[in-house]
Image (cartoon, rainbow, N blue to C red; front, side):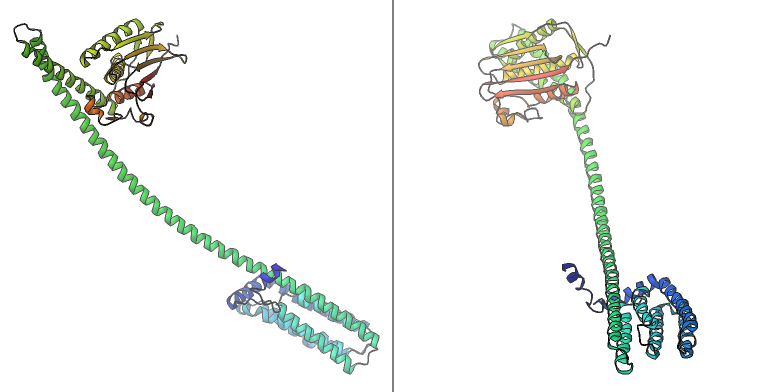
Length: 484
């Protein structure tokens, strides 16, 4: 019921015409094109069957049927043939619906007249012609439901009225004949109504599908346009970013080259100054005050040379210029190097901290990092431990861990690091507190250098720390095993 209500929102419930006249006009055009061949065939078969029945009736009818044959062969069939040939002409293709309606009208009139002139008083073969006419006109001949039903309803009513007033039929014959005729008409009308209703609903659905497809195409076109615009925008942004990246890389190269050059240039005179200063401090001919001044100069120059070395290393890391090499680690020799580094750092920073060097001293191992770079990492970690440990101790442990990797652990009892700063402590120029740059000398690149060197060797570096209790830095580097 709900479906029918929705259907009747766009279709007239009686005539089945679309409320939208444009759609109705287009529907008739589509209807004509779809059923043109079917209608031609129906008219052709109708003419043939009607002519065949006329021959049979001529030989078997008891009535004088000269008038019937005249109606059939003199009027109805010739006109129907003319209409049939007209329907074959493409020049009047738009009038086919009207031609087929006229064909039904002539057939109906012919059968009706013969029934009215018939003298039979029973349910005759002529009456059967009306029954066949109902189904033929409404269901086989594809003209509009409203036209065919109106024509055949008029035929039925004329037949009934004429029979009542001009034919003296027995009441039982009249009732029986009328019953069969009305039932046939109603059944035919019911079938015709729903056949056309379904056809019109299908046409409406096809229009909705077409409309939806057009909307989808429009949306697709709009989306493609938007995508094209976004793509163009993204391509432009990417080009701008690539240009900016190229400029930034060029700027970095220039900056790194400048830093490298200036560091080399500064190191040369500083080394000379340091050498002469050391001669002054070792000479006995200068007074105590001069010796103090020379010692201060020596310390400052050493710090400057250390900064220059860090800048050079940082430049090499930043420009990916670190040469990839391997080192054979002898743990006894490494402990000796670590001892020297620790004593040198403590002396330079003038601290008296206890320290411990731990090693499980296995066989020599080979790691994918140069000896110079390995000692830089160890020195930076020891320097970091000494710098931030005022009172207490630190330890350095070099082992082969359970995962078969070379591991360095540097533990101190210094100021520690807050948990929220652990992730950024390895970034360039970052100390936990920016005030630390004043409290603790340095440019805050030591841990960044360690990370760059270790990462280049395929290793990892991380820290575990607790504020005011100390920190432990861990370094792992894969060991290269000889396949032989």
